Each structure stands twice: as structure tokens, then as C-alpha cells.
Amino acid sequence: MRSRPKRPSRPRQSARPAARPSVPPVLVRQIRNGIVESEHRGHIVEVDAGGSIVRVVGDPERVVSLRSAAKPFGLIALIEAGGIEAFDLTAAELALMTGSHSGEDMHVRTLQGVFRRSGVSQSQLACGSAGAPLDALTAARLARDGEKPGPLRHMCSGAHAASLLLSRMRDWPAENYWMPEHPSQAAYRSVVARAFGTKPDRLVRAIDGCGIETFAFPLREIARAFAFLADPSALAGSDPRSGLAPSLHIVRDAMLAHPEMVGGSRERLDTSLMKALPERLVSKGGSEALRGVAILPGGRANGGSAGPSGMAIKIDDGDGHNRAGWAAGVEALQQAGVLEGQALRALGRYHQPTSLDPHGRLAGETIAKFELAPVGELFG
Image (cartoon, rainbow, N blue to C red; front, side, top):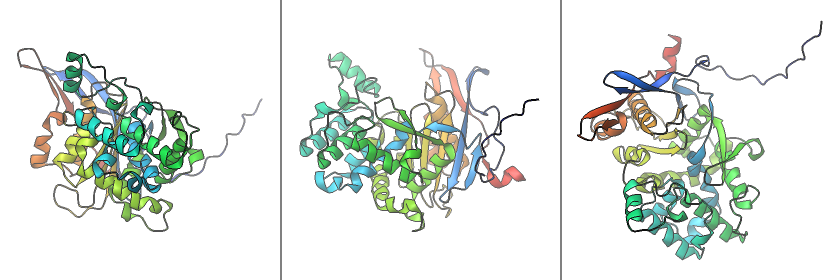
């Protein structure tokens, strides 16, 4: 009888609060006149500054690509290089470089100002223009006027501009700044790896929709990185990530001050969350229905003194209509004690998105229903 080959031993992992579910839980349902038309499964995890799970539903170890949720961390490369001083960058411009903007005129004007001052040509942007602009009213106006949107209106043009500015500072060639082997992308990988407490050669890499790299992590690690963004000073000096704290403070404060640059003025949940809860959280989504939320110290609706935390939300089917990610995100923040009262009411269109028929009658509604269980209750 042939013996089976031995499997390589795995490093021991710390115990998780619950076994990994074989089937992800349903977080959101689309309902029409009481009939469930579709279901959206997914995962949500909240961790504290030390990385310990606070609340969870689904699998906290589910590995997903960061996509655009990497941008707040990647911008550190330009900040550490002295880019703010070199190009006299404002908080609004920094916020735009962390964002996935809607391609509105205010976003275009902001980026044009950066390019004029830096002497970098906007023609070097290599993000393309597919899907731009995200803002429906802007897109309709451009179509009416016969204007074809260019790369400036692409949601990733701010992040690409940061790589171009870094290349200008370092005298690196600009024509291929988006290639993985380019030094600007190596710098981007390095700061993302540091923010996540790993090394660049251990990153799980992939190509994002705009042409530069993105990286994959378990949801628990994404939540931990957003807890770091919530309060960069909360880390002990012995933590290898602590050296990023000054730059990450700048990133966080820019996003808090200019939420419209992170998303846009209409129907962008990241922006709407930060406006509804000023100075209390930072939100940054990524494609395929991922969202990271940094909850600042004391950012609970009940005025409690809870420390910083991070939350990662993922809808498994990618949520092509945005409705499931919206509903799950608002519901999770309500259950975590972050949203209530007027702020929750202001976000009602995201919490329970509806669709109307041509006569204004309710046709369908999106309902989030799950229990984001505190970890202690999982053992009760």
C-alpha cells in the first residue's frame, strides 16, 4: 500500500473566534413586494488597534484584493519623499490622491492645479478613461456637449498623479511609471507592505483596473490597517509600522477635511459617511464591493470612549449595483454603535436603497439583515 506524501507543516495560527463558514452568510436581500429576488453573501470584521477581532460575521480570513482601498497607504511614498513641500500640495489635493473620485469638474480643476505647479504633463497619465466619469450628471453633460472624457476624469487619476510626482522628484522616467518594475511602483509596494506589517516580497500582487498593482490580504488584516489609519499614534514605538504614523496622520486628516475629494458630491458612500460623521471616521472603498472604514477614537454614537478600530466589509458577488455594499456598510456601522439618530437618517438612501417605477411607486428595496456579533458573545 502506497503511503501518502506528508503535507508541509503550517505555522500555527492564533485561535479565531469562530470556525470558518463553508457558505458565506447572506447579508443583504433585494425584495420586491415581499419576494426575495436576490441575495448577497459576504463578510464583515471589525478589529481594534492591536488587531484583535471585536465584531464579526462571516469569515475574517477571507482573502480579497484591496483594489482602490490601498490608495491611502500608497500615498505615503510621496509624503515620505518630501512631496508636500516640493510641490506645495494642499490637503484637498492629498485627499484626491487617496480617492476614487467621481470625475466632476472640481476634481479635474484640483488635479490640473497640481500638474501646473509641478511641471508634469497630464498627458503622461496612463490610467485610461474607461468608465469615466463616475458621476452620472457630469457624464450626461459631457455627452450632451460632445466632449469625450479623458484620463483626468478617471477615478484613479489622483493616485496615478502621485506616482508621476514622485517620479519627477527622483528624476525617474515618467513614460512607464505604471509598470511593476518602475521605482515609483516599488516605493508604492514598500509603503503598503510596511502599513500591513509585512515585506514587499511577501505581498500577493495583481493588476488593478487602472493598470497599476494592487495587493491581497485577509479581511482581518485590512481591518487592522484601517485601525492604524484611524489613530496612527496608537501603535507602540516598538511596532515596525510606527514609523509611518506621521505620514498616515497627514493622510487621515486630509481625507477627513475633504471627503468630497475622496469620492464625489453625489451618491458616493465614502463621502456621505464622512460628511454625516465629521471627524469620526474615514471610509475608502475598492472595486468588487470591498470597503475599509477607520473608526477614530471616541467615534461611537453614544459618546463612549472606545479606542480606534478598523472595519472591512466585503460582498462576495461584487455587488454590481452598489446597493448591497451600501446597505451592509451602513447597517454594520449602526450595529457597531457608530451610527444613530440624525446621521443614520441622513444615510437612509444607502441603508435601504429603493427602486421606483416610472410613476414614482416603490418597486424594490434592499434590506440588510445580519448580526455583527461581538466576539465575546460568540462563546456565550
